[in-house]
Image (cartoon, rainbow, N blue to C red):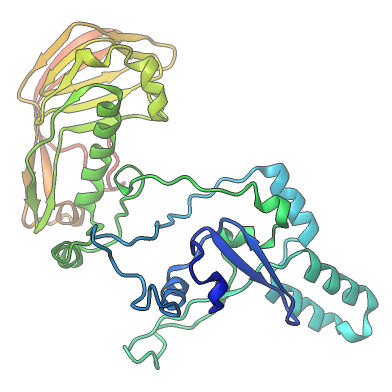
Length: 364
C-alpha cells in the first residue's frame, strides 16, 4: 500500500493520497482516494516525524484519520471496463498462471504479463495475526489477500479522478455488534465504543432520533442506563422501517410538518409501510403505525399517552440472547394505527422482540 519516506511527500494527506508502484522499479505518483488498511496505516505513520507515535487519538479523543467501514458503491459500467482491461486478476493470480504457462517459453503469456504491468494489477495484501506481543508466533495461518477497497489502485489517472468518499459521524452509520458483554465493559471503560448487542440496538434507535431532530421534530433523549455493565441511552426507541423511510430525505414527504411532531424520552415509535404520512403527533408511550401494501394511513392531530413499553434489566437468563442484550421489553400498553383504525392493547405477557429461533427478529 502506501510506504514512503520521501520528504517531498511526507506531509501529503495520507488518506487522500496514494503512491502506486509497479514491478521492476517503475514508480508512478498519482493523487487518488484509496483506503489505507489499519495494520498498514500505523507503521506508515510511525515512519514520519509528525506521527512518530502512530495512529493515536488527538485532543478530541479520536483518531485524526477517518475510519473506513468498507461500504463500497461501484458504477457497474465503469467497473466492468476496468475488469476487462485488467482481466480481473491479482498479482498473485497472474504469477501463478504464468508459472503454469512457463512465461519464458510462451510469447502469448509474456505479452499478457507485460500488458497487465502497464494497465494495472490488483496488489496482494498480507495481514498476519500474532499470539504474542513480540510477534513471533502466528495466531492462525497467514494468507495472501486481495481487498475490494484497493480497487482504485488499478485505475489510470483519469479513472481515479472519479473516486471519492462520503464521510459521516459514526453515530448514524456504524455501530457493530461483535463483542461479548465482558469485553464491551472493558472497552467502554477505556473510552472505546463497546460494540455489544445493547449498544448496537441503542445506537439504531439513536440514529433514527437524529434523523427526526435534523428534520425539525421534537425528540427527547432518555437518561442513560446500565445493562450488564454496558451504559446506553435506551430511548426513545424509534424504528422507521425501510419501506417508510429509506433515507433522511424521505422525511420531507413522510413528515411534512415536523414542528408538529413530538416524542417523549420514554416513548416507542414503530412506523411500517410506504403509505404512512405523519402530519401531527404527540407521543408519550408506545405507538405502532402499520400500513400494508397499497394501504394509506395518515396520522393527524393524534395524541398518544399510555404506559408504553419498558426495558427491564436482566442480569442473568437461560436465554443467551437475553444475556447478550441485558434486558427484556415489558410491553405494558400499545396503541396501533392501521388502515382499519386504531386499537389499544394492554399487558402483552411475553417479550416478542426476542425469538428463540431467529435472534432479534421483531414481528409487528
